[in-house]
Length: 214
Image (tube, rainbow, N blue to C red; front, top):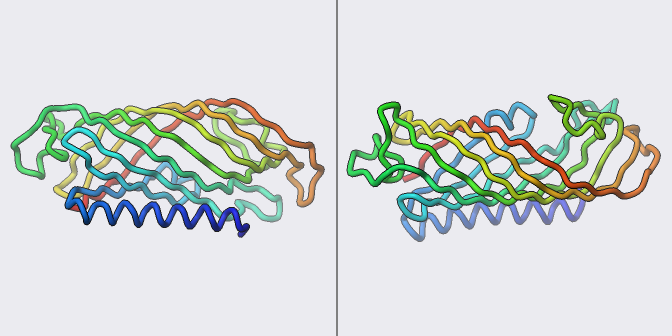
């Protein structure tokens, strides 16, 4: 693990500790979430969301993949992703019991509310010899790219109330970003092709399981 990677991981841990500390100090609601679709890419992830008022929240999502998919082929999807965000929930203030509202926003007959999320994304990555669904990012199928990216995006979703403490979310969106990297063959110590950069579009999908800490 490089010094840079260790430093970034330290920042991630401190960020999560800060959210927990702020939640305790302000006696407000904290939500923890996990994106099941992101898990499917073998990337453990966690999100923290802090209530600001009855309609707005602020949070951060973090994902970490620190291993090779197939070491013999140098097939990898290694990356660290950090995405701070703000959310706006849509509905009206509710006086209903807590198990029938989401942070003070009333739900409809389907027990759901909608939301819009804006986020900034940073990632340090080392990926190669990997096929992405729908033919996206074909350059990493036969090359290894190592570098960083930054993106801004948004997504729209729905949150269903399962119980007083549990929620289920479905969301979709897109981000536009800029990446800069070094490019090599996929083989270990493969040919070096130099540095590159590009602007890209990043589709975003999520099926989140959420736990509310009151």
